[in-house]
Amino acid sequence: MIQSSPFTKKKNSVAELMLWVVGATLLGLAAQVYYFGGGVIVNIILATVTALATEAIILKLRKRPIKQTLFDGSALATAWLLALALPPLLPWWMTVLGASFAIIFAKQIYGGLGNNIFNPAMVAYVLLLISFPVQMTAWLPPVELAQNPASISETLSFIFTGQGSNGLTVEQMRLGVDSFSMATPLDHIKSELSQGYRIVELKESPIFSNLSGVGWQWVNLGFLIGGIILLFKKVINWHIPFGVLAGIFITSSLLYVSNPDQYLSPLFHWFAGATMLGAFFIATDPVTASTTPKGRIIFGLGIGILTVLIRVFGGYPDAIAFAVLLLNMAVPLIDYYTKPRVYGHQNKSRNGL
Image (cartoon, rainbow, N blue to C red; front, side):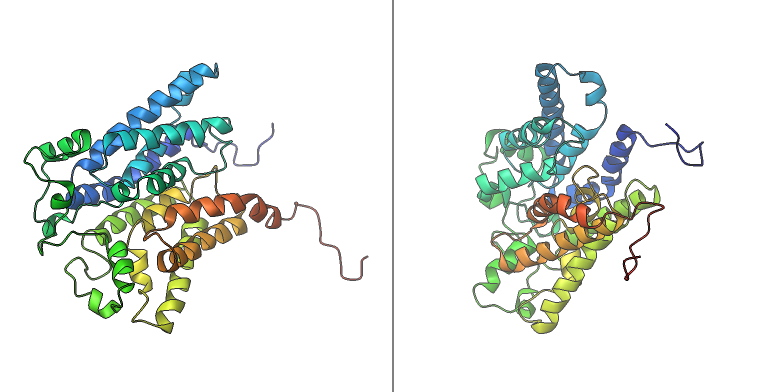
């Protein structure tokens, strides 16, 4: 097969690309661990072991080579991204269920890497969110606002036994300094707006900071820096992250301008929830995203627009997973209508000559 010049260029392997993706999340992961506890690390370990073991079993049953597939890094990346989206005190068996479901039903059932049409990590996340909404929204308060900060031993006790060794319940662990059960900023705003409060009143709560919520702005900043590293290393293209952030900015700006007492600012949406993780690490999955330059921008814009609409008008506070899966379904249509013109072919002239 003849390739275009330069003939000495080096192509990144799948394993190398996946390791770059995992490595670029480390800043965001560090911020997440600092503010929300070591349960994030436990989730990563559980999800990774489960994903690798499940992939090995399925490959064995399918009589496919195991070692080569296990070391391509795709199962590791899926497990890692799923774990980053899970609450730090999620029961261990839910993490195991999610990771195994991602590999079996969102990846291997389609034939393995390159054949799946939905992002496996987001399929598993949505499964857990719909099946176990209480546990999946039980985030701890940021460490500086926590009334009962979770130690490593307490974290392990809650994850593996469902109860703390010091007699505290999960709800008591979620109490903030004001003795009220803490929620994520997006969840808190959605709940309070339904009670008739205004945005300006809600932002007086100690859970909020300059850009979004305490802790969450630094987590998103960490993932933003990691995403820029991926762009610099050419692991991902700029089109999808740009589209996602532009879609969020445009949609939230229109709502904010129309009624700032009811809708959040664009910067808040950018640095709240899983925005940066979704824009740079999840939506850019090369297998399930659009493949044409124009298509990638449309794909990203669609995710950004849907994210804001679901956050504001839907039943879930954060909507990255739902938006990504909905646009995954639209990829064939997007690619069909954004195919670049074949080199050497010209468009027909208006007079038909």
